[in-house]
Image (cartoon, rainbow, N blue to C red; front, side):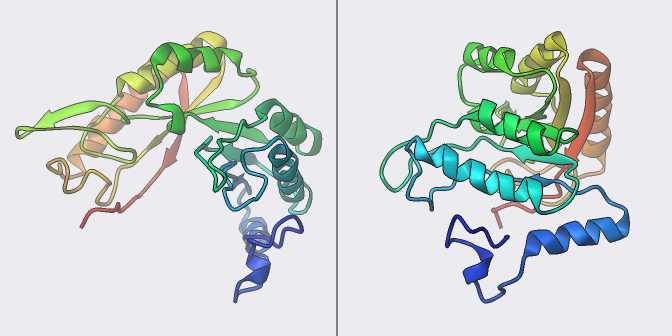
Length: 239
């Protein structure tokens, strides 16, 4: 979405040919809104993906975003990782990414989302949280991965669901670890729209579920210090 000089897979080669990140940052400034960005490290378009050189490539692009668009309020990583065209997985150098953000935007909130390792055994997820610096924020999806049964149908809750009000065991385990270490805790949740479980689990109407969800989030604030919500009005993949 910005004309990066480090890749041809860019808006500069699209019919639009405009710097969308610049336009968004300027619009936020006009509206008095703090500007941040989400940057996934999972760039399988890069020929370097799956090699040590990829971290150089990613840091170059991260530097562009940190230095060309004014004050940055937050940088959000989703930590997605899979095989690239060469069949290799990438080892991300997060300490280097964090150091770069602190160098150019020392006041930015680094938001580290645990979404993409949710299927990993709990002890390994907690080990990773225990290795994180304490001056970042941990974002944990509130209801995800919970096994749920209704009407004779058993399924795992997907992300951005309102069927299960939460919190799930996945959230609770990581929230406890964050509270123990003094890491700021955010959550991702959905309270509107037809979510990804539509057509898989019987859909429960809102606003009844909103009330249950927010009551449980208040309890999570009291128990583990949950202090931020990334609301997602997601309308899903299912018809």
